[in-house]
Figure 1 (cartoon, helix red, strand yellow):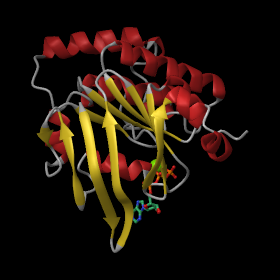
Figure 2 (cartoon, helix red, strand yellow):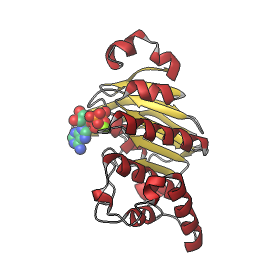
Figure 3 (cartoon, rainbow, N blue to C red):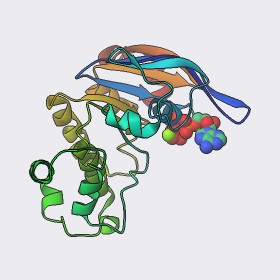
Length: 235
Ligand SMILES: Nc1ncnc2c1ncn2[C@@H]1O[C@H](COP(=O)(O)OP(=O)(O)OP(=O)(O)O)[C@@H](O)[C@H]1O
Ligand SMILES: [Mg+2]
């Protein structure tokens, strides 16, 4: 579905990704785990065309999207839920959801229909649809960020540390939602520092260290890999 082939990326003169390759299979959860500064967000930003790859290619359903601009990549069906969520704090929940559909050409009735199904999917958003997004809790904002992404009707969703800053019980809720979204037929690339959780939910995983893919395997394989246990699972 989405293939990253040997991409490198730099900020100024410093190269931070060194020929990273990932395969993101259709309707699967693929996770990319690694420590602070390993290059996880940069990888997602390269896929979105926010950071330009200096080497390698990014292929979506056989089409080379490496050189496309971000709005074109969004139109092709890839959506990023960025680190820190970046919802619009001064807009209501409803307005945030409407913003998620900006790249779609569907009729008002269709969009209304989709908003209704998202509000059914996230009961917490339904009760608060008039509330200013910035006044909601971290967990609610994460749900909103996911809902807003779904409003764009993407095929592939890139999630950057959805569990960040959330209490364990809320993290669990967020991951249950991610599981349901996979059930809707979406393809997910999940970036996480919470390796245990991510590997438990993921079909396949990659470990990135200092801009290089160090290990890969099924979620189960990586969970029982002694190197992963030592470095990321805190055992
Ligand atoms: N805009 C930027 N300008 C310069 N250097 C950057 C920029 N963004 C990231 N970097 C550097 O690139 C490297 C990779 O950063 P990146 O944000 O991709 O890591 P990450 O794996 O997402 O880390 P974290 O888990 O802390 O979010 C780091 O060394 C970081 O300092
Ligand atoms: Mg990051």
